[in-house]
Image (cartoon, rainbow, N blue to C red; front, side):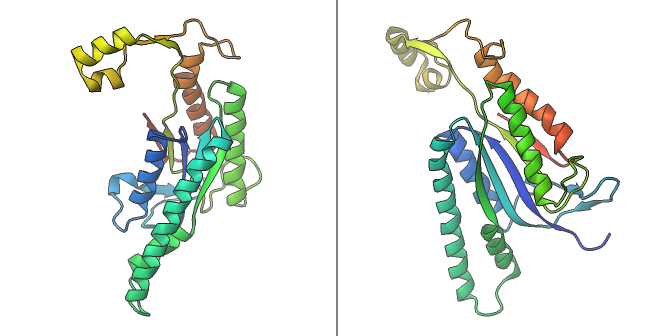
Length: 246
């Protein structure tokens, strides 16, 4: 089989730019930047070309985090937070390397290389617009093809960049009013956890439609994700690509 290849992670996160979405990004980087990445997180077998032999990947040379958000401007704040964390991790690893002398540890060198080759990118995506979803999918396909030197558009050539994970976390809630009396009853009767995770006092809007003529909340929370996954399967998924829909 030859030597196992060293590839780069490419993770698309369909997230909001604060709260849980930002936390997912931070946790992902911290987890994959460690020496002992959990086995169940790794893409286990990669086929580098059509009809080629599947190979088990033992090391990864970098990470590309693609944050897909409705507002690129507001997502810049999340990008800065993540880049600061990458820089801080890299500085700590280099200090550790200096303490080891000239030889150094191979695992430490791999982690430093991984952080050096970690990039955080932002892409515009509005799940409430199918045109935006199609456009986003096309841009990601071109990005991967350009990274691999494959500009023929057939998606068959695979180099060192490919999609390892697709994390679908974004969602919306459309409401027009809070019923504070009902909120107090739920807090007192059902407790804090129930009142904050499954609020019954948020009076939701009814009958809102997207520009595509679909229920706006349903399209943003369900159908937009579904269409993106289907497009991804056709364009740039590998057998080892993992989808996390939360």
